[in-house]
Length: 149
Image 1 (tube, rainbow, N blue to C red):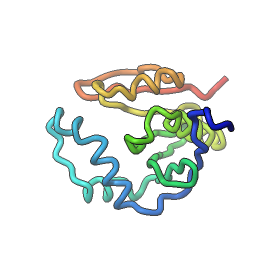
Image 2 (tube, rainbow, N blue to C red):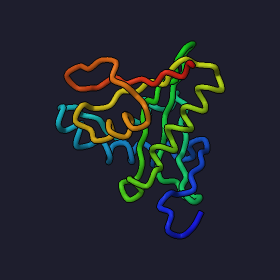
Image 3 (cartoon, rainbow, N blue to C red):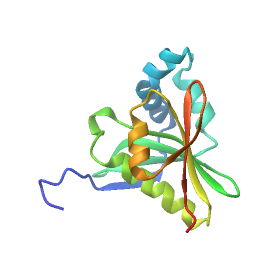
Image 4 (cartoon, rainbow, N blue to C red):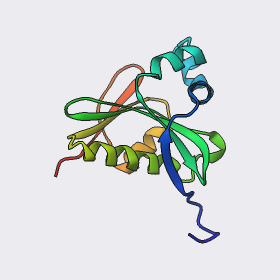
């Protein structure tokens, strides 16, 4: 990797600080929660996410985000993907999605799924990655990526 390359060296580890991860989610999502009248706090987020597969996203060895996944018999659901705003638009989100895809394929699952607020610009990342819209409601776009050939 040369010095002009904007991509960061990204790795993943089990979440080491659930409180910090919840605070990042609340910070990144606050404008959407406000828009839709959702009243969440960091403690609620932390409690709701503890039973998921929580992975710290590290760029150049520093925690810059969190990805939360859940699995069933056929699918991996990307429940949350948060990157520190100072580290966004550097390919970290796409690399996190690649890791989610790798984990799902390792379990021979058929699809990767997620939901995103309809007003979120993150939907463009998901579309570029290959996710397609499966359905929509008043708040969310539900998207999926087929993992079968």
